[in-house]
Image (cartoon, rainbow, N blue to C red; front, side):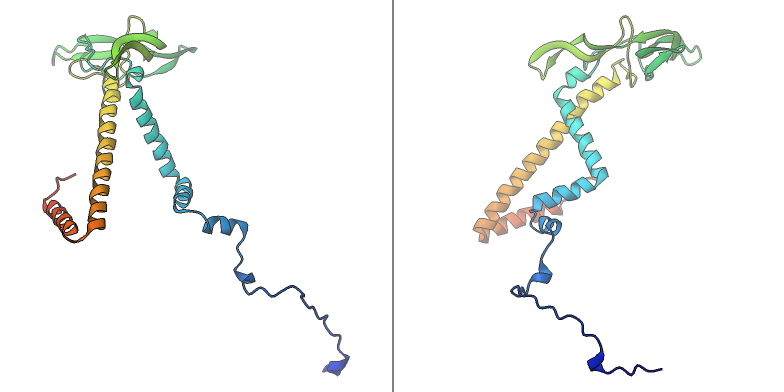
Length: 236
């Protein structure tokens, strides 16, 4: 059956009239979050993107800790850079333990027992599990010169009394590898950041001069740069 009602008899929908002034940009209004994003500066956008990248955050924290460690390398290293242990040449790394025969002793290492392989005449090191040796913390150990200026002997960790602590083993001269790596990190990281700072400063000055004066100064700068780039770089 068809609807026989006429248009005039159908119920009319209510007519709404907005008395507010017409705003042609009503569809372009931003929410608070959108406005915060679009009004943010370049550095803030970079910071937000950096925080969302977890590997970058973890790497930055690790690198910051490494650079902080360079400030107190003498304090972190259990031995001085040049301390030699002639009785422990090429000693293996000593594992860190906490429990001995079911009893908690805190951080300790087992004493190293040295024997001689009569076929190769090499020293053989084995851990003496009957002699746990507890590490000392915030203690006095090898003397050093802090940054080559102040004499001291205070360390974060020291070897046990009458024992040794070679966390990463020793080299061919009996020097503690962990201590040498701590000192080497200071040299490597310091040279790296100084090199980057000098390169940045030099490039900023030359680029500013070339951009400001232009002409011959810019041409000379570009030719020097081109000549420098033409030389083959060493393989990484």
